Length: 99
Image 1 (cartoon, rainbow, N blue to C red):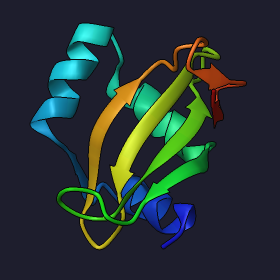
Image 2: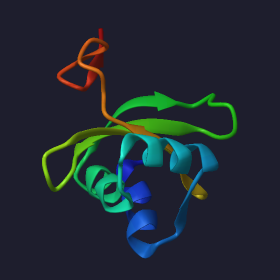
Image 3: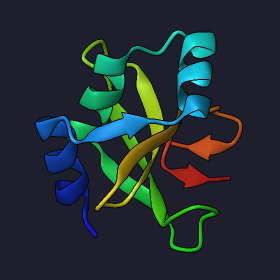
């Protein structure tokens, strides 16, 4: 699957947020439009083909305001935002490569 497939599902509104994602986004003050913007202009930086529930990937992107975000999202046909967070600079080089 590709990022374009994920973006298409999000653009059409055919996606959801996991309970975990909602809780984390509230705690981290991350808004739905920020997640969408990060995915729309982002890039896949890691893939998890053997993820617990379904294959997923980690997308790195920036929000409208320039905030760096990581968004873990499952691949189609069922696109689910699994979690979203600001990457920790101690763990990530340029927000894209694990240290």
